[in-house]
Image 1 (cartoon, rainbow, N blue to C red):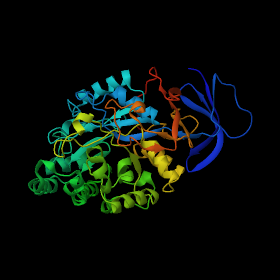
Image 2: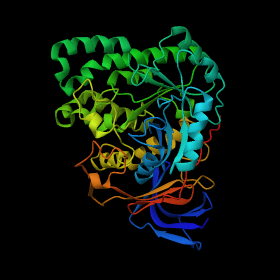
Image 3: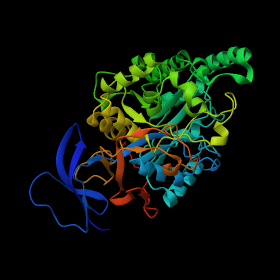
Image 4: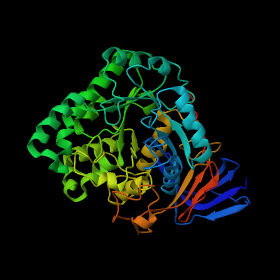
Length: 445
């Protein structure tokens, strides 16, 4: 593997900005150089004027393989991810078949080893009847156990109280939850379906899948975690009141209950449904301006720990249906990092905070081995970003298999120029290197 020197970059890492160079040997960072003579290398990347960040780690994606490959594949979406500066992902179990046994899970790992451009891990899915499988989980090799405490997709709702108690008491690894109260959603659905029939406007999505439904379910998860001493990570928090349920005022590594927020809940509000319709229909729903402000504030005051995507593509034909027939979810991995950097330009966040929430904190929270930081001896997962290179999201530059994005027509000021995965150039100046393959993530637990 050739040595690489990234020369004269603005390095954003561990709360600071410095001018420096990075020397990469094999698959790891050999030296971070801030002064003195630079070593010779087989390849030199002139990074003057560019930002150098650790590769982003996305702790929640749905890449749809196996079984739903008309929407996406591990290969297609991992390529979109590295084009967007995401070098590692953790993928959800609601595929077909659902990843609720270790045999099925290992099949996904074998598939990813053959085709994923990014590093990968897969959650084991919980059901009402697979507790024995969950207990076999090796916490060093699997990112976590996923519990749907609201049947967002498929039939993976875990609603057996005894089983929930056992999961929270006995899970050998982190528990990640989708929290929406099913009874509340069903009651709201009946009310609004009776009112509008099949022609219900999309703007009522956050009324049906309400903030109250989210809070009720998240509160239950937090109570279970505290009762049993479980390590709980609540995914895609979307409402202001849920933030009080998380552990606060302590270092991340000491927290037992942590929270993730997704890019779409930071970018859109319920005022956008009339314009975007099904394209911003996610579960949990995009909610009010008050909720968005609380989520943004929650990042800056460290109530919220991680920014992710919940990348969940559907075909545009599936999306172009009336409310009750249009599926929830949308593609985001190619545009998440640049969207967050756009919010830096808007004065909402800092570069250092974006790196903390998208790179450092996922590595800390999941105890990922030697990733998420620019440190000597760590894996060379790196992203170079041009901070003043405006471009517009158009169908011709979208890499998702589904071919569309909720950001179509949006101009971003930051552009990903290079992405390195394990010391190899996975993306360079608009092109994905199809020969680069990611590795299985390992965990120091």
